[in-house]
Length: 155
Image (cartoon, rainbow, N blue to C red; front, side, top):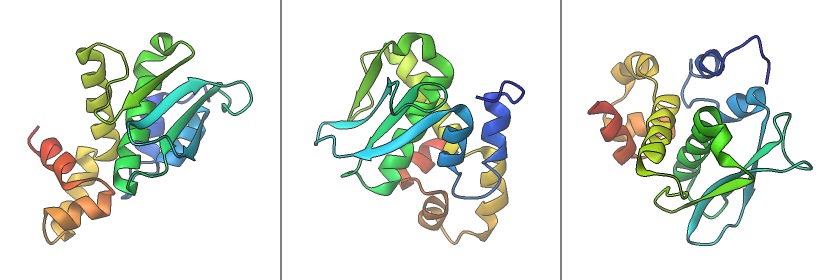
């Protein structure tokens, strides 16, 4: 990770257009993104991997069988764990379909909140909402589910 740029500045850099560029964020944080069939019970995982990990040594695996919007939330959720809870990740964590990775509910909620703010920053929402016909169109532009967008808008 470039030590001169904070994670928040990296997020802002890639959040100016919809959909937010998650690959750009991951790359600047030094995290590798890989798609893999993880079965039906696993949405994604982040782990240390000296071979596949990026400059940080971490790799995020996202389930290739999930729909793209689900994959985007999984990536953002795992990036949030990387930024907020790196010292707790240890050798790795695996998220089930409900984003329970063995952490406390509060830690998972923190990751979900940051994931939502990465994918749907309020400034970007304000800029593109007037051009969206409805919530479905807005969710599509952002690359998120309507349910995730409704939760974000209720905040």
